[in-house]
Image 1: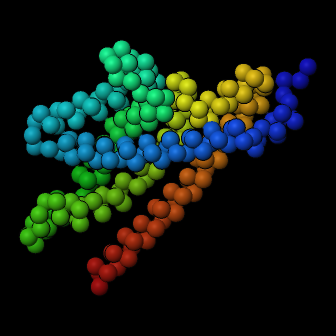
Image 2: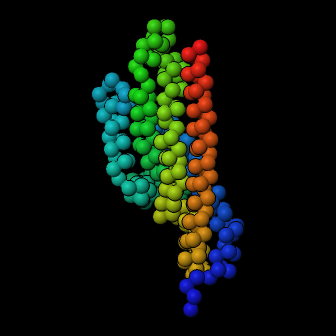
Image 3: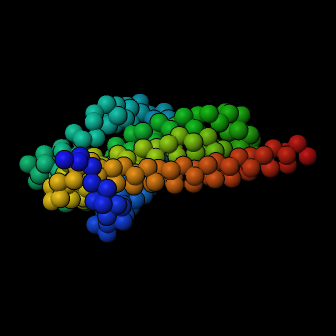
Length: 230
C-alpha cells in the first residue's frame, strides 16, 4: 500500500477551500502587523520615557508577552477571559492575540532603531527651534525607519507562519483548513505538503518584496549622502 497519493496531492494544490485559508492567513498577518506596529510604537515611546512608572509598565508588557508562548496567550484570551465576562469571537481573539504578541517584539525593534540615530541629530533639531514632536517626526523616524526595515521584514516573514498557531482556537486559516480536510479525506502527508508549499510561496514572495523595499531605501540613503557631500 502506497503512503503517498500523487493524484490527491495535485488535486489539492489549487483547492478553493485551502486557497481561502491562504487569504485568511494573509489578512491576519496584515491586520496584526499594522496593529502591532501602532501598539509597538506606543510601547517603544513608553520604554524611552523619563517617567519611571511608565517605563516599568512598558518593560513589564514586553517581559510578559515575549516570555510566554503565543499559544498560551490565545487560550487565555479565548477561553479564560470569558470566565470574568470578557468574550471575543474566534476572529477577534486571533487578531488580539497576534497583535499583542507582535507588539512586544516590534516595540524593541522600533526602540533600538530610534536609539541608533545619533543624539546629535536631536540637538541639531533643537538648535533650529524644532519641537520634540517635530524632531521625532521629521528627523529621527525617517532615519530610524531605514534601520528598522530589515528586522521588521523578518517579523512579517515570521508572522505569516505564526498565524498557524491560531488554529488552536479554530481560526480557519491555512493550517486549520488543512486539518479539516485531513479529517475528511485522511490524506495527511499530501495535505500537509500542500500547506507547506503555500507557506513557502508566501514567505518567498514576501522575501522578494522585502528585498525591493530595502533596495529602495538603500538608494534613498545613497542619494541623501551624495546631496550632503555636494
